[in-house]
Image 1 (cartoon, rainbow, N blue to C red):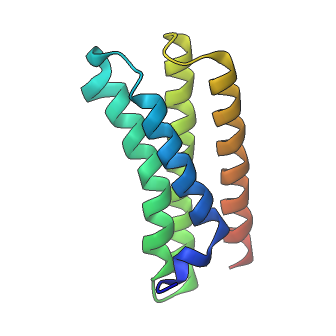
Image 2: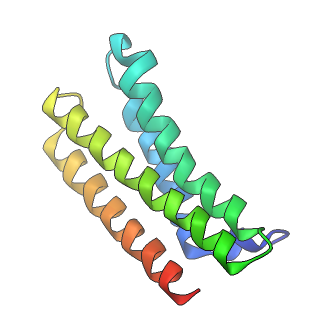
Image 3: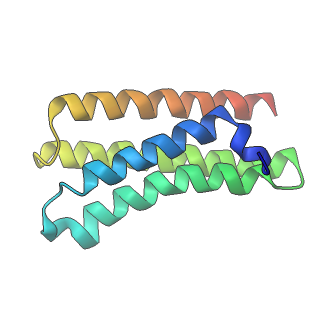
Length: 116
């Protein structure tokens, strides 16, 4: 692996989840294309991208800051999941699974952040 972030479990999980959100968001109605669909996909990608960007920083404080951004983006995904669920764009099992996976990921990111 050429880059340090590739070895991080949180990066690997966030990449997997970002891809899962992409698949789920494609099922949203076309009226949501430039709103909820775009927002949830950007937030999911942001979790992953902030981990990678922060990992190559020059200090632990900088990495910590980017991990905070990742958690915030993860919470944004969760909020979008609530909206998608309330609008019946995703099933209850999809919601519960993704909610749980983002909850675990955010905890893992916060745990790493606390060790810096």
